[in-house]
Length: 430
Ligand code: PLP
Image (cartoon, rainbow, N blue to C red; front, side, top):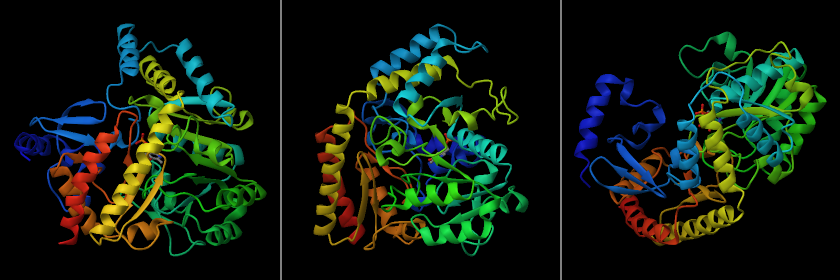
């Protein structure tokens, strides 16, 4: 595949933009190098690059694009909003409508606030939980990405009862000392951490279905136990549903599983592809937030009419249950096809899938936590990734990322993907 123009643009980008990309996940570091492809158009399930190549897209903008690129209903909403002026610095009725729609779909959101990104949403839930409980420490789970605010860029200590260490230069040791990181799906480690720090814990931050070391579901009872132990200790449960809200059904993962947090952070899909974040939860906790309470949070762009209209339009499309039925049908076909081809090529893989989101791990062991995901074969993934890219199938360039299907993908797109995957598994084997 000729990607000469992408190569020229990447060289140019490197001279202007640090690392040539505006988010490190877009670089090809995790797939043994190569040139990120520069796109100029997205339509339905496809991306089109600057050299005139077409790709079946499984990145989905890292999650927000669930109805396909340039969905007509969402595009019209964005255009209408832009024509009415993009920012007023005053409230609008759109904010009320969108808040009401979110609350109807996710009943634990008694009150909400809109922000501009998932990072802001998570960061603020931590602040609010600290304000509400008067405590400082947070427990999170290893390998779960919660955005790039300082308190969540913290790596695990040497055991569940030890404090964290900075996971990025510029995060202070004092910040890291407020965070305890334990393995996902390991209730004993969680109990141990709560046993040591329980009365200092403000909140436990968890993705109810993990999306950031691939798709990993909680073991039966794991989330129930977290709620029980956390509430017994007088701390709050925060769900990071930035990936999972509206991903698997019309609502959040909490509504699917039937276990509910005190606060929820959201982003991605709820913006229909535009910048957005939102957080919400129990009234008594949300009343900590300014102007009612002492926990400050603000935003020039928060609740802007364009993101609101795009978000409402996206939810209007998703309200049709056939969207999720289709994601399930296509997801199942893709999973079965990939498993069959891998077996034929004698390449051991594991697929974790939930509806239209799946991860292909190169491993013969099941993946239930970050260490399992980390132990999977990255070299094999890199070979698989590049082989597929060369055939016009674009995955996210990391063994930890999910493939995101959209309602614009077709059975034919899955067949084309599987034909390319057959070649890619052979490339992995040889
Ligand atoms: N939380 C989760 C679970 C995420 O996957 C992400 C982004 O990938 C974030 C938070 C941060 O969201 P944003 O990139 O919108 O700041």
